[in-house]
Length: 210
Image (cartoon, rainbow, N blue to C red; front, side, top):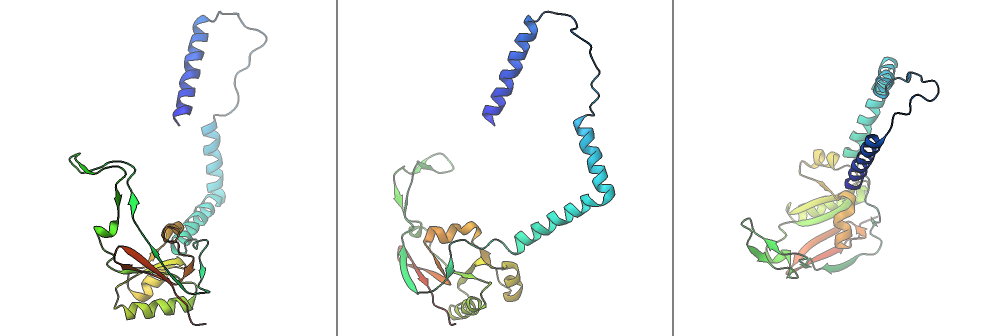
């Protein structure tokens, strides 16, 4: 946007200088009044026509339906499949700061290049359970785990409708939008259970009954 804005200013300055140096050369050939309708008026006329024919309402209804579908049935996370071979592995959430971290008063809390582990500050209060609600086998397995851990599980979907599941289970259900969490944790198969072990996260990609 900055380059576009600069270009417009440059063109305006150039046109101003040219106008200041211009000389009236008179009229060359016949001149005609501009007869094309104003662009905004043309757009308004087209919208009114679409409104009259009902097309505008149809387009609005289609857009609303697409929005509802996107919310109720988000796109499934790409690259995640149903568990074929169970596996367990660990994830170290430590990271290195790329800049100084200051508090609200501007005082240095952590210097750049400091390596920190979020688990040193806050613990994982609940297990994270990733599963695809389109697969009823995974839904049943998830329900078993919720009961086994007495509700200390945060269900996170990689596919299916989280709204439908919330209405059925009467608990919060989350969605891994764009696969940000599964990619970060290296999860390739679901259902997968994430638990804290010390300063690491243990990830179990679980088998499910056929």
